[in-house]
Length: 254
Picture 1 (tube, rainbow, N blue to C red):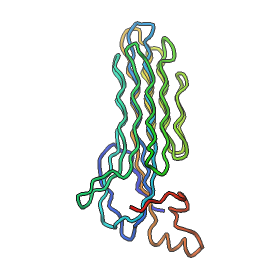
Picture 2 (cartoon, helix red, strand yellow; picture 1 turned 120 degrees about the vertical axis):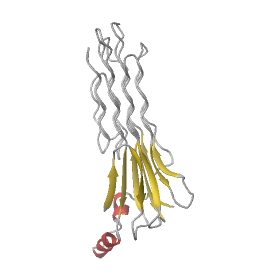
Picture 3 (cartoon, one colour; picture 1 turned 45 degrees about the vertical axis):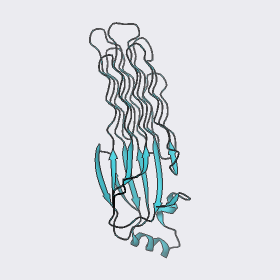
């Protein structure tokens, strides 16, 4: 199996290789940023951001040489001072040939945490109902106490929804989903999310200077395909196409 993987925030193109007509596309949305903290109040902690979702599709009928475009999103921005964190953007993979620019698959980003005395956790990115397989990101938590920020939701994995934050602690991801950042303790910033799609933790309360939430993690794209040589080798030992071996009953003729 050959693959192209990228989790650097950017727009780009993937050109379908020679002899390849089937590929599996996996996308992760970016994590939401954590909220900032209020100063010298009893409700100063910020809420944690939500984790990005995951989606997968296997498509056939690809044309070698055709160009497909993708957008890998950066994570949501951390809230500064009393500000909310911003939402993580969606990751998408689209046609980009012969005037057809339709989106083939996308994964939603997580929402930003809430600050400014109304602390609440950001919701995780919702699953994509049109994908073969999709899981939602985990939810961020509201401020944990008068002093602490809320933990962030984890990014969804390729086999599971992202875990939602409990209290102030960092949230563990898995199967490709990134960890959500921990909420800040008193006088501390929130923790940053981990790739792919982990949310940023909320800031802790400060005695004199506002604190910032954690930054949400970038999304991610993986394109996997079998070359003619790999398919031939699999056939010689009685195996099926490696893509079908990994993701059974997920093929769409495109």
